[in-house]
Length: 157
View 1 (cartoon, rainbow, N blue to C red):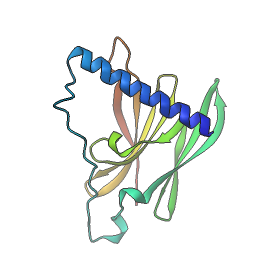
View 2 (view 1 turned 90 degrees about the vertical axis):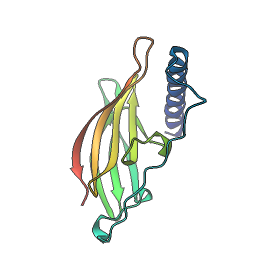
View 3 (view 1 turned 120 degrees about the horizontal axis):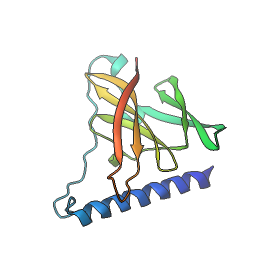
């Protein structure tokens, strides 16, 4: 399982490097003007039921066998003392590094197989934490890839 995770992380790194190189060659990316992304801030409130720090969220991945020759992984989100099964996704899953999170996203996971996958994320919206699932596709010579189409799965209590 560790080898699979290392292969996934290596593949993601190569994809990111290839995408950055393609953008640089097209002139869309200027490393001299680039700023580092800031960590999303977690809102503080007085309501103890809704206060979560980013480190309050963790993920559990369980092998769910194969479907049509593709590995399946069941993803569970833990927050506080609660755990909630998010779903079963195609591919191997790994937690996203903080610098790869989108605005408003406090934690996330990417499940990836054969050039595409699902991104599961916890987003802060209006003082609540919402779990959403979106799509990711790798860049090719013809396209810049895709990350988006997030749909809300549930709101955390």
